[in-house]
Image 1 (cartoon, rainbow, N blue to C red):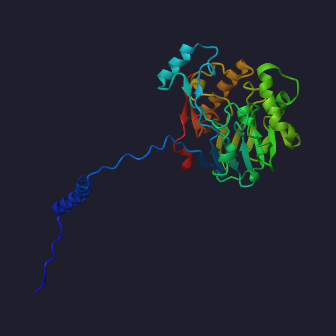
Image 2 (cartoon, rainbow, N blue to C red):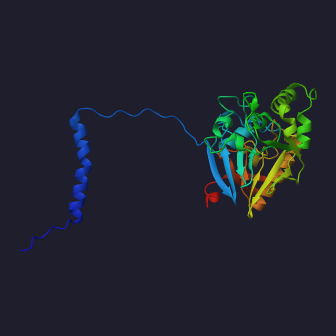
Image 3 (cartoon, one colour):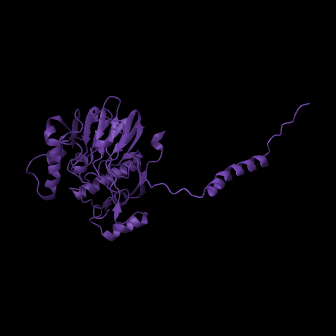
Length: 332
């Protein structure tokens, strides 16, 4: 005689699951004590982010997560504080503080490793420990400083040039350096500037003087390496350069300091930036660059946009633009 085997039905399974679920709770209540909350871990953000453009491997490295007072008067010196704060409220952002990106970018082309800008270093706008993280952050991102072939400097401000030197030595010992000729000639000479400009120039000289023989000089339209081409973007500084980066028909645009805030800079490109040396030319450059990018619909590396500082520009209305942060477009 064959013994029958009962097949569990839905009600039996659900009852068993409920009993198993309740068992730990019952045991906990019998034990006479409750688990306390774990220690809080604090805020955490990624320190590097990697993606591809064609065959170019791109790595963004965070140089700071600092909050900065503003965006007024850094942006909107020709507006009023109330106007800038109203724009922040409309966009659900804090009115008196913001977290800018500081985002050096490494490109592995397959033949060269190219670094765009070097962050704050030891003497930039955001000093250590709040900034100047590139020196410690590049190795965890999988890149050896000695493997960097070319360091491209978009312009000479301390938060872009400050990381060239570290502990009195070049952070990238085997690299050559590329910068616009106009930019270098503006910042490098001794005795050219006074006041606040001299403070900035002194940082530039401290980070470049010992490396003068390693510098090569760019003009708009010239290639850093095949696939990376300099573009004129004057105004923020006299020789400020942008770069078109193209591989296998894919493209991304590095705009350096064509924006300092993801809303204020784009919604009101006519608002002056306190760091622009030629404020009217800086505004004209922003309008031209934003309009071109909104038309061409190509991704952007925006050095001061929120980390990882990748996004797109959308034309909201004529002369008014929006930053659309990258989500997954470049992960395909």
